[in-house]
Amino acid sequence: MSSEDDCSQKPDGQDEGPPEEVVPGGPGPGMGARPKSLFGNAVWNIASIVWITLVALFITPFLIDNIGVSHYGFYMLLVTVSMMSPSFADATVRYVAHYRAAGDIEGINRVYGATFAAEFFVLARERLWEFMTVVRQALGGTAASASRTPG
Image (tube, rainbow, N blue to C red):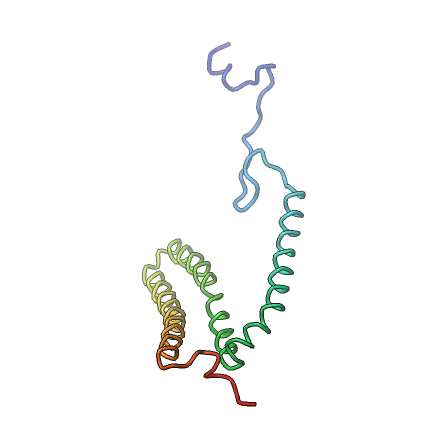
């Protein structure tokens, strides 16, 4: 028996067989499906959605009382647009990978340009909101007093 044969056999003398195939996006070599962790992740995701909803239900009246209805509406618009920001990153990664695999440099440049423009728009709106709040306070009013209706 040669030394090469010794390396390809298990200590008990049995062949190892073909190497495990790694499926892209699937579990790595030697890893089976893990239903317990899948269930645990699902439970935590549902719990986080419930928690965020409960916090929003309790904080909304407080925000409306303190900043007013019109400012609360604008605030929610900013929050909604800001929440799209992580989606921009995910989409950028996906499309850059797609265009890179196709060798389309112009496509990559378009994706980066569109992402930059969208992120710039989101950032500009947030900074404008902050600036307007500071200006309103500097002129002697608060955000809440400027938006409340008499009565």
